[in-house]
Image 1 (tube, rainbow, N blue to C red):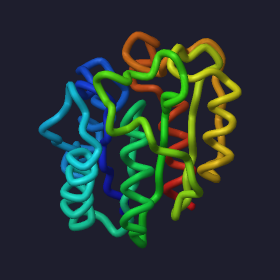
Image 2 (cartoon, rainbow, N blue to C red):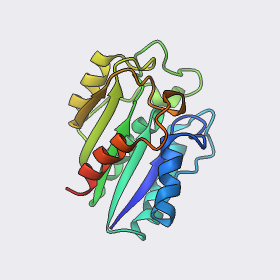
Image 3 (cartoon, rainbow, N blue to C red):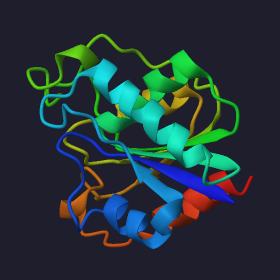
Length: 181
C-alpha cells in the first residue's frame, strides 16, 4: 500500500487543484507538507516540512510517493538529494525553470542556486509545452538531468487549477504506473 506526500508550490494548492482533489481521494494515506513559509518559500523550511510529512506518511504505507507541483518539485529534489530515502518514488509536475524569466526570484531566493541532478529514486516528470514558468526545452533538460521519465502535454499551461484538469485522471494513471512498479 502506498502513502503520499503532497508537495504544492507557492501558497499551496487551492481546492480545485488536482493535488487537493487527490488528497481528498486518498484520505489518511496522504500527508500535505506544512511549511511556515508558503508565500515566501525558504528552502530549508520546505525541506524540513517534507521530512516531517515523509515520516508521517511512511507510518501509513509501505512505499511513499512524493507528489510535487511547481516549486515543490525543486524542494522534493533537494530533499531527495540530502536524504536518499529507501522506498520512495517522485511524481514531479510542472517544475519552474530557475533560470527562466518567470521564476519567482524575489519570493523564493533560496531556490535560485539549485541545479537538477539525478534523483535517487524512480521518478516521473510531467510538463506542458505552454507552461509560462518553463519552456519545453528546459522541461526536457530537467527530466533528463533528474533521470525522470518525461511525460509532455500539449496546451495545459502550468498544470494547475487554471488548467481545468479537475481530478486529472491521466496524471493519476501516470502516478499509478510509477507507484505500482
